[in-house]
Amino acid sequence: MTLRHAVSARSLSFAGAIAVLLLALCLRGPTPAHAADPTWADPKVFEAAKKEGALVVYSSVNEEEGLPIWRRFEEQTGIKVEYVRGSDSQLISRIAIESRASRGAWDLVLITAAHKLPPQMLAQFDPPEAQHLLAAARDPGRRLYGFSANYNVPAYNTNLVKAADLPQSYEELAKRTEWAGRVVVNEYDSEWVSALLQHYGETKGRELMRSLGATLKPAIVNGHLAVARAVGSGEYAVALTNYVNLTLNVKLAGAATDYWAIDPVGVFYMQMSASAQAPHPNAARLAANYILSPEGQSLLSRRGRIPARADVETNPPGVLKALLERKVMPILLDGDREKKADALFKELIAGRVR
Image (cartoon, rainbow, N blue to C red; front, side, top):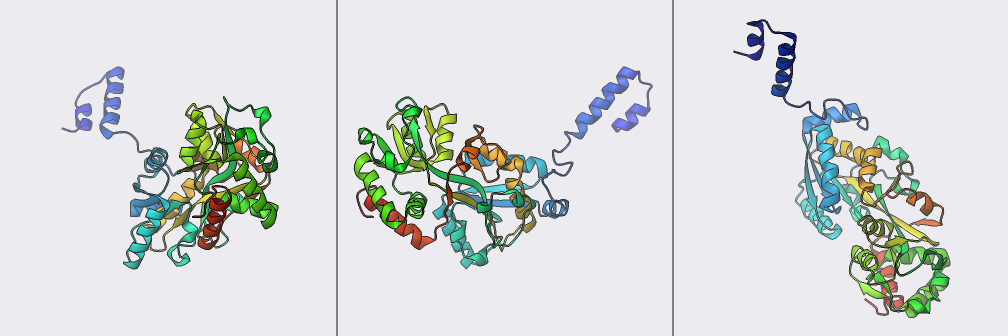
């Protein structure tokens, strides 16, 4: 006997009727989170994506940050996400191998080096939310979209250095002989080098970097996050340059660290692209729009990442506004320019040639 038949066979009190109604709702199960179209979704693309039912994401965003975001996407859309995590080089190699096999294995890639992939591998598309991105995050060719910004600025340990004592230019920083041996930097920072050369010119830029290296004698560490943690723990007082989002990530975890911005501020974007051979092309378009939406950008900012649009607040608040008040220089390097910048960094800052 069905529940409906049971109810019609007897007379119920009002309270009994309410109890049966609640039981019926429980048997039906919870209402799906994607019962109504998400506000960020194009209805036609959403319907087509639901029919595909799946999405394959290749990403260099760590699982702690990435998985909660894509879990939320699944909850809102009912589309199952396969999340493949790897470094830029690992994912680019994987994509190249799959492309040679003419196998469309991925839908969306989120890395810092999507611009190094052959253009024919990447689909041209226009996510509606892309119109709200900062200009430097939009590719005129419509194959790349910046979804998170990496700004290069120095950082410091707030227990070891007072904010009032921070130098306000790289020229002043290069005179801080008392900081010699108390400074750390990643083993390469090609975007930072390129920003300095563009800002100061080739000759003065080289002289400044040579002076920074000779005066500060920075320790060389493998990994930008390792640099941020070394400053946050007090192992070093200052980072010559690092990504603001990683400094904030360590600060949000409770460490005594912060950044300070001096001109020029180099910036490059983590890039999102869709595969030209995507097995789920509509799901790729839907997911791209989600990551660029206020909701997606806010989720990315929870651990200190800097949004690619000015109308989404940073965590902590006010970071993007403060950075945009400086001389920001967008940097996008091809392989040859990157190698040249890395060689200069090794020669002038690290004191050795690669």
